[in-house]
Image (cartoon, rainbow, N blue to C red; front, side, top):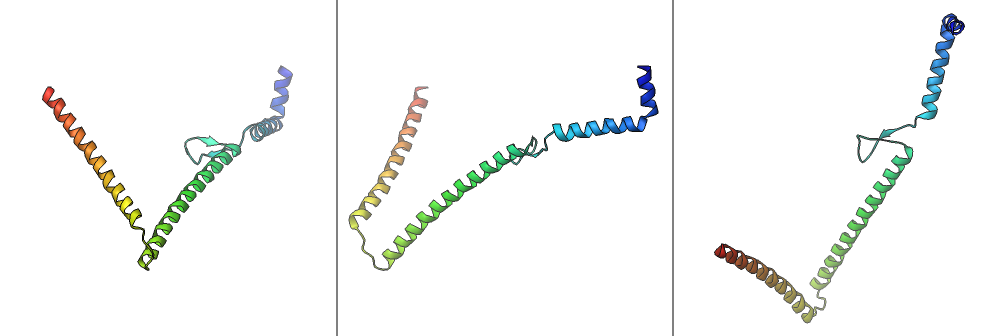
Length: 128
Protein backbone atom coordinates (compact mmCIF):
# COMPACT_ATOMS: atom_id res chain seq x y z
CA UNK A 1 0.00 0.00 0.00
CA UNK A 2 2.85 2.34 0.81
CA UNK A 3 4.43 1.68 -2.62
CA UNK A 4 1.11 2.48 -4.33
CA UNK A 5 0.78 5.74 -2.40
CA UNK A 6 4.34 6.68 -3.29
CA UNK A 7 3.66 5.95 -6.96
CA UNK A 8 0.44 8.03 -6.93
CA UNK A 9 2.20 10.94 -5.24
CA UNK A 10 5.07 10.76 -7.75
CA UNK A 11 2.69 10.53 -10.76
CA UNK A 12 -0.06 12.92 -9.58
CA UNK A 13 -0.78 14.38 -13.01
CA UNK A 14 -1.00 10.99 -14.67
CA UNK A 15 -3.24 9.55 -11.94
CA UNK A 16 -5.51 12.59 -12.04
CA UNK A 17 -5.77 12.26 -15.83
CA UNK A 18 -6.70 8.58 -15.52
CA UNK A 19 -9.39 9.35 -12.93
CA UNK A 20 -10.85 12.13 -15.10
CA UNK A 21 -10.74 9.93 -18.22
CA UNK A 22 -12.54 7.09 -16.41
CA UNK A 23 -15.17 9.53 -15.10
CA UNK A 24 -15.76 11.04 -18.56
CA UNK A 25 -15.97 7.60 -20.18
CA UNK A 26 -18.40 6.42 -17.52
CA UNK A 27 -20.53 9.51 -17.95
CA UNK A 28 -20.63 9.37 -21.76
CA UNK A 29 -21.23 5.65 -21.93
CA UNK A 30 -23.48 5.15 -18.93
CA UNK A 31 -25.70 8.25 -18.93
CA UNK A 32 -28.31 8.81 -21.59
CA UNK A 33 -28.83 12.27 -23.00
CA UNK A 34 -32.02 13.81 -21.64
CA UNK A 35 -34.14 16.87 -22.32
CA UNK A 36 -37.25 18.38 -20.74
CA UNK A 37 -40.49 16.62 -21.64
CA UNK A 38 -42.94 18.31 -24.00
CA UNK A 39 -45.96 17.36 -21.93
CA UNK A 40 -44.43 17.82 -18.46
CA UNK A 41 -41.35 20.10 -18.40
CA UNK A 42 -40.55 19.04 -14.84
CA UNK A 43 -39.36 15.57 -15.89
CA UNK A 44 -36.48 14.66 -18.19
CA UNK A 45 -36.92 12.21 -21.08
CA UNK A 46 -34.49 10.39 -23.35
CA UNK A 47 -34.67 10.19 -27.13
CA UNK A 48 -37.11 7.25 -27.24
CA UNK A 49 -39.51 8.78 -24.75
CA UNK A 50 -39.38 12.11 -26.59
CA UNK A 51 -40.22 10.33 -29.87
CA UNK A 52 -43.25 8.72 -28.21
CA UNK A 53 -44.42 12.14 -26.98
CA UNK A 54 -43.96 13.67 -30.44
CA UNK A 55 -45.89 10.82 -32.09
CA UNK A 56 -48.74 11.22 -29.59
CA UNK A 57 -48.75 14.99 -30.17
CA UNK A 58 -48.92 14.52 -33.95
CA UNK A 59 -51.71 11.95 -33.64
CA UNK A 60 -53.70 14.31 -31.42
CA UNK A 61 -53.18 17.18 -33.88
CA UNK A 62 -54.35 14.99 -36.77
CA UNK A 63 -57.53 14.11 -34.86
CA UNK A 64 -58.21 17.78 -34.22
CA UNK A 65 -57.67 18.61 -37.90
CA UNK A 66 -60.09 15.82 -38.86
CA UNK A 67 -62.69 17.29 -36.49
CA UNK A 68 -62.19 20.73 -38.06
CA UNK A 69 -62.61 19.20 -41.52
CA UNK A 70 -65.92 17.59 -40.45
CA UNK A 71 -67.21 20.88 -39.07
CA UNK A 72 -66.17 22.78 -42.20
CA UNK A 73 -67.84 20.14 -44.40
CA UNK A 74 -71.10 20.44 -42.43
CA UNK A 75 -71.00 24.25 -42.64
CA UNK A 76 -70.32 24.05 -46.36
CA UNK A 77 -73.20 21.62 -46.91
CA UNK A 78 -75.63 23.82 -44.97
CA UNK A 79 -74.43 26.94 -46.75
CA UNK A 80 -74.76 25.33 -50.19
CA UNK A 81 -78.25 24.07 -49.32
CA UNK A 82 -79.26 27.57 -48.25
CA UNK A 83 -77.81 29.06 -51.46
CA UNK A 84 -79.72 26.51 -53.58
CA UNK A 85 -82.91 27.35 -51.70
CA UNK A 86 -82.38 31.11 -52.15
CA UNK A 87 -81.82 30.63 -55.87
CA UNK A 88 -85.26 29.11 -56.24
CA UNK A 89 -84.59 25.48 -55.50
CA UNK A 90 -87.41 23.14 -54.63
CA UNK A 91 -88.48 22.97 -51.02
CA UNK A 92 -90.11 19.90 -49.56
CA UNK A 93 -92.95 21.23 -47.36
CA UNK A 94 -93.29 17.93 -45.50
CA UNK A 95 -89.60 17.99 -44.54
CA UNK A 96 -89.89 21.61 -43.34
CA UNK A 97 -92.96 20.70 -41.26
CA UNK A 98 -91.14 17.72 -39.71
CA UNK A 99 -88.12 19.83 -38.80
CA UNK A 100 -90.29 22.54 -37.23
CA UNK A 101 -92.31 19.89 -35.36
CA UNK A 102 -89.11 18.31 -34.01
CA UNK A 103 -87.84 21.66 -32.79
CA UNK A 104 -91.17 22.44 -31.09
CA UNK A 105 -91.30 18.93 -29.57
CA UNK A 106 -87.81 19.32 -28.14
CA UNK A 107 -88.83 22.64 -26.59
CA UNK A 108 -91.94 21.03 -25.07
CA UNK A 109 -89.88 18.18 -23.57
CA UNK A 110 -87.43 20.64 -22.02
CA UNK A 111 -90.30 22.73 -20.63
CA UNK A 112 -92.02 19.65 -19.14
CA UNK A 113 -88.81 18.49 -17.45
CA UNK A 114 -88.27 21.94 -15.97
CA UNK A 115 -91.85 22.14 -14.68
CA UNK A 116 -91.71 18.60 -13.26
CA UNK A 117 -88.51 19.46 -11.40
CA UNK A 118 -90.10 22.63 -10.00
CA UNK A 119 -93.25 20.76 -8.86
CA UNK A 120 -91.20 18.03 -7.17
CA UNK A 121 -89.10 20.65 -5.39
CA UNK A 122 -92.25 22.45 -4.16
CA UNK A 123 -93.72 19.13 -2.92
CA UNK A 124 -90.56 18.29 -0.99
CA UNK A 125 -90.53 21.75 0.62
CA UNK A 126 -94.23 21.45 1.56
CA UNK A 127 -93.65 18.04 3.19
CA UNK A 128 -90.70 19.27 5.22
